Image: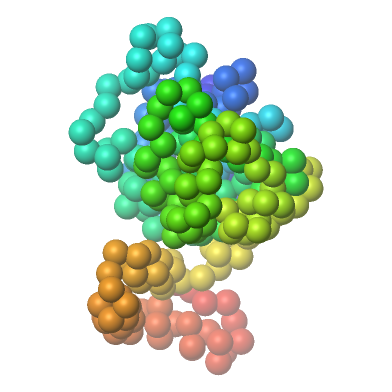
Length: 260
C-alpha cells in the first residue's frame, strides 16, 4: 500500500494507519488513493468484519490537507471535483462500505481528519488528543467538516469550532463533553481499546450490522415518520436473510453463530 498508509490484519479486523508523521499525518494524494483502494477492495473481501482507523505516532491523528504541499503547488494539492461526494471518499462509509468502523484519535485532529470522526461508529481518543478546525485561520472556508459533524455535536459546537479557528482548540475531555468522541483512554492503551471494540462489533451478523447502520444513518436524511418506515422496511427485508434464523438458532443451541 506504500509507506504513507499502513494496512494490517488482526483477525477479522482491518487496521488502517495514516503514516506521514513528518507532515502531521496530513493527507497526500497518495494517501487519498490508498484509502480509496483499501475501502473499494473490501467489497470483494468478506473476511474483514470491522475496521480501525488511526494515525502513526503520538503527535497527530490526521491534520487534513497538506498545507505545505498546497503552498508549494500554489493552491489545491490535487485535482478537485465539483461533486462533494467524490472529494469525501476517504472514509469507508463514503465508499459504500458499511462495516463497523472504530476511529482511534492518537493526537491532533483537524480539517479533513474530522471526516473520519463524522463517519465513525465509535470514536476513541487518547487523553492527549486535541481537536480544532483551523480553516478560517489559514484563509479557507470551513464548510464540509462542520456540516458532517452536526449530527454528532450539534449546531452550536460546530459553529464554535468553525469560527474560532486555531484558538478554538479543545482537549479530549471537552471533545467527550460535546460528543465529538465516545471514550477517552491513556495513549498507550488506545489502539488496543479500538481493536477490542472492533472485535466486539465483528461478532455480529454483517448483514444485520449493515441494515442497522443504513437505518440509523438514513434517518438523518428523512423526517421521523419516513425514517421509521425506512427502518421497518429494512427490518422486514432482513427477516428473509439466513442470519435472522441462524442467530436465534445458535443462541438456543448455545454455540457461536455461523453468519453468511
